[in-house]
Length: 191
Image (cartoon, rainbow, N blue to C red; front, side):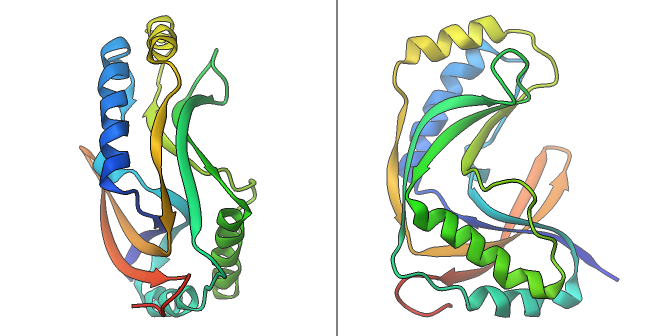
């Protein structure tokens, strides 16, 4: 049986990707030991589905096609922070500020997939973009200084009307993403 690693996400416009790429270049110079994200792979994850039998793909697409919202989700990309904290970081993230409609969309995606036996997320929805991962804490002082020197980080805003089902294939150089389907959730019907 063939398995696919799937997730549901919003795409990020090119102008925001360029702003994020410029910041990553600056911060990477201060902390080259971190594993920095490729900006072409950045997305706003609504739901990580995980490894699923290929036989369930059509049922997943059908469930996602039923998700609707009264209005688009507006997202503002700004600031950076650390998970779990600044002293012992595992992840450097870019923040996403959004109205309640984004959390409602994530919940609706989750609810549409639950009848298919796809496990619900146990953590609260916390939209962010992972910019870097840390294996060890070398170079953090220089990274903190670079973030301070950058001043308020504003990456841009967007209004999302559609989300996507992606397949993720883990490779030596990082994950490779393939868009399997697009779903309009505000306005017109799914494609």
